Image (cartoon, rainbow, N blue to C red; front, side):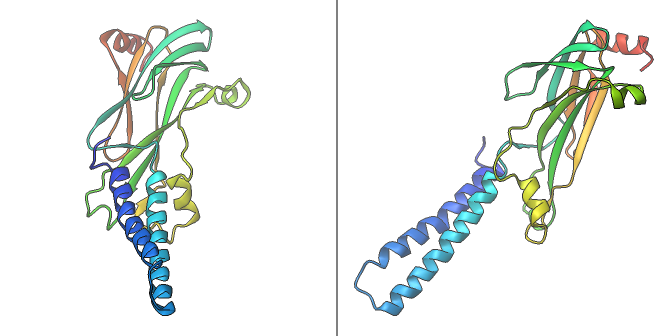
Length: 222
């Protein structure tokens, strides 16, 4: 993680009022009037509260990665087990390669994107993203309603999560444009490999990762 990442900047910003607050609280131990101690104690409390809120906001960004340009976020390799039943290996750094079993005709990858409004956007805060889940889907709507579903969560949720905080306290986090999600899907084909990218505007793009997968898609009419 670079020092320019929002999490680091917020934690550094939280450390300054925290140190000042502790210094003021410590100074109250000296020989001072009751009024002076009360004022210093109040200022120390305010500074510590500011530090706590800033640090809490920073912790709520855990699990999100910066989005500065078209970024490859995942690759998927598909192997068929039986009809409408597949094993998919997902590689989405920094997490280790993980295998999932999906049922259906297509795979779908969902991501959550955090974008910023003023003044954060003016300060150059980059969009952030987090992969949310990998699931299987059926082409037939009736099967989608009735057949066995397969949904695998990918996000390691931090507490508190900024997305949740934005929904609960919109009046305090108006500069966070948190209500944005994106998804991409392509068919589950034995031997296929896919590459998934995310644009700075938050859109997931799924593409074949090699010529053989492109051939399989062409044969399938995609």
